[in-house]
Length: 216
Ligand SMILES: C[S@@+](CC[C@H](N)C(=O)[O-])C[C@H]1O[C@@H](n2cnc3c(N)ncnc32)[C@H](O)[C@@H]1O
Image (cartoon, rainbow, N blue to C red; front, side):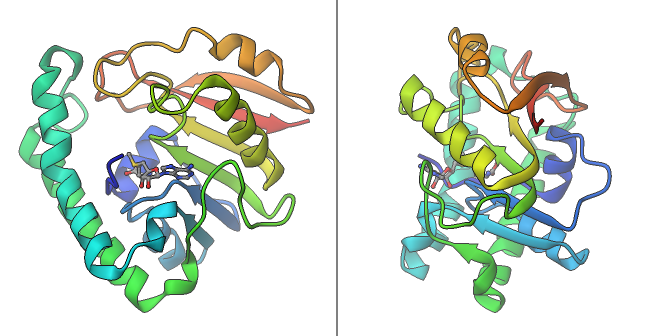
């Protein structure tokens, strides 16, 4: 799986973020710069990803390799992507390169913000974070992780959240297929409400919605 490096600006649009709460978890943060930039804004921001177990040279390599690999996926599925948000492939690459640089600098200077762990078992207490974000793992990789894994992962994301979990996108990587079992999965969740909400971001055609799960 690619260890991609989306920027704060991409997260802001994918999750339609206005103001951030006091604490935020980026779960499956990869090489994203969201945590570094949120921390700079004074937020208690933590990133979690199993890739943080890698030795530094391997992690750097994985993050750097994700850019050409992502472009390869886009080239392979050209009709499945639109450039309205990014403007051009160069602009997208620029976001990702800057985000990777920012992430690699932050994980070196503030390693306490980066936790090596993975769903469905997170090493955090119940309700630890006001907001939990998940970009490009759940649903995106549903060819790799099955429905039962998704159910366990969703329950874990809810457990560590005190208010809200937001997940983007709601389609598979590459082809952008919808997830047929998503409505049933959401119905099975207890103690929460879920809503599919439009966001001001689209790259994969039709992937302009996030899932918002709120504790009741
Ligand atoms: C496509 S990247 C997304 C990275 C970042 N959120 C972004 O939007 O650029 C997917 C990430 O999920 C991580 N991952 C894979 N399995 C995971 C798991 N079980 N729990 C948490 N993260 C996982 C990978 O290491 C990878 O960094």
